[in-house]
Amino acid sequence: MTNFADLTTLRVGGPAAHLINATSEADILAATAERDLLVIGSGSNLLVSDDGYSGTVLKIATSGMKIESDACSGATVTLAAGEEWSSFVEYAVAHDFAGVETLAGIPGLVGAAPIQNIGAYGNEIAKSIARVRTFDRVTSTITTLAAAECAFGYRTSRFKAEPDRWIILEVTLQLRTGSESDPIKYQELADALGINIGDRAPLREVHDAVLDLRKSKGMVLDPGDRDTWSAGSFFMNPIVESVTSASLPEAAPKWQTSAGVKVSAAWLIEQTGFAKGDRLGGAGISGKHSLALINAENGSAVDLVALANRIRISVHEKFAIWLEPEVRLIGLALK
Ligand SMILES: Cc1cc2nc3c(=O)[nH]c(=O)nc-3n(C[C@H](O)[C@H](O)[C@H](O)COP(=O)(O)OP(=O)(O)OC[C@H]3O[C@@H](n4cnc5c(N)ncnc54)[C@H](O)[C@@H]3O)c2cc1C
Image 1 (spheres, rainbow, N blue to C red):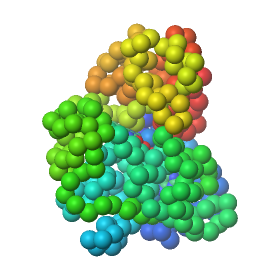
Image 2 (tube, helix red, strand yellow; image 1 turned 180 degrees about the vertical axis):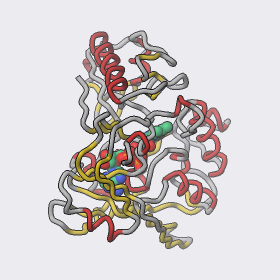
Image 3 (cartoon, helix red, strand yellow; image 1 turned 90 degrees about the horizontal axis):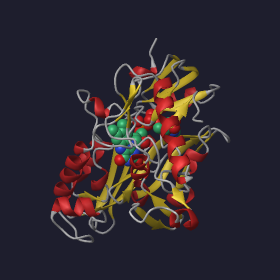
Image 4 (tube, helix red, strand yellow; image 1 turned 90 degrees about the vertical axis):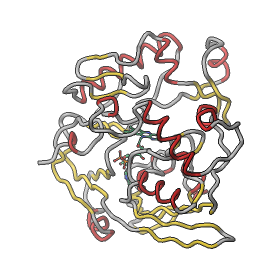
C-alpha cells in the first residue's frame, strides 16, 4: 500500500487506499466515474491526514508537448498535465520562449499549475495561459476553457474554487519568442541581476538568478535538505481591507492590489514571535523561510496542523488577521 508520505513533498500522510497511476488520457477518463476522487500531481501543495484517503486517488502521469512557433505570433505550447513544470521552464529558456523564466524551480506538474495560478517573483502562470483543456465531471464532457473563463486571481482559479469538478488534461501556453526576459518587476530579483525594475535581462540569467534565490530560501526541492520538506508557502499573503491595513505598524511590508492591500504573511508570522528554525513536535518552520512549514523530524500531519494552528491563532490575536492556507488540506482542518 502506498502512503501519502511517499506521494507528497511534506512526506506525511497515511495510506492511499486505491491509487491509479494514469499514464494516458484514456486512464484518466476511465477513472472519472469513481466516487470520492482525489486528483493529484506530485503532491507539492498537499497536506494529507495521517489516516490517509479512503476514496480513489488519481495520480496524473501523462506526457507530451506540442509546439507551434513562428516569428510573428510566438510559440503556442500545449503540455500534457503530467509534464513536470520546472523541466518545461528549462526547455522554454533553452529555446528562447519568454514569459515563464521567473517561474523556474516551482515544483509540481503542469496540470496543477493553473489550480492555484502558480506565481513567483512578480509573475503568474495566468499571464501565459491561452487555454486549459479539462474533463468536466459535472457535464461529463471534455471542455476547453479560454484563460478569461478560468477566473484566475492571486493563488486561485475557477479550478481551485470547484475542486471536485475539473480534471485538467492539457494546458496551452502562449509565449513570446526571443532571448530577453519580460521586464523584471521584483526588486530582489532586479538586485540579483544588477538591473533596475522594468529592465529586461537574458532569459538564462533570469532563470539562474531565480533558482539561486529560491535555493537560498529552501524553495527548490532537495531530498538532502530538510528545509525543503515542505509544501512551499504554507499560508497565502492575506489581502485585507484598508482599515485593517491602516492599523498595521508602518514597517509592515504591504502592496496595493486590485483586490485590496496584500500583507506579507512571513512578516506577520515573525512579528508574533515565531522564527526560522522553530520546532513543534516533528513539525517546524524552515530555517530558510518563515512561511514554509516543514516535516522537521518524523513529523506527522497532526504535528503540522498543530503548528499551523498555533501560528494562525497568534497572528489573529496580535493583528486580527486570519492567515489562510495556500496548501490544500485533505481530511484535515485548521481551527
Ligand atoms: C519547495 C516548494 C516551493 C514552492 N514554491 C511555489 C511558488 O513559488 N509558487 C507557487 O505558486 N507555488 C509554489 N509551491 C507549491 C506547488 O509547487 C504548486 O502549487 C504546484 O503547482 C503543485 O503541483 P503538484 O503537481 O505537486 O500538485 P499537487 O500538490 O499534487 O496538487 C495540488 C492541487 O492541484 C490539484 N490537481 C493536481 N493536478 C490536477 C489536475 N491535473 N487536474 C485537476 N486538479 C489537479 C490537486 O487536487 C490539489 O488540489 C511550492 C511547493 C514547494 C514544495
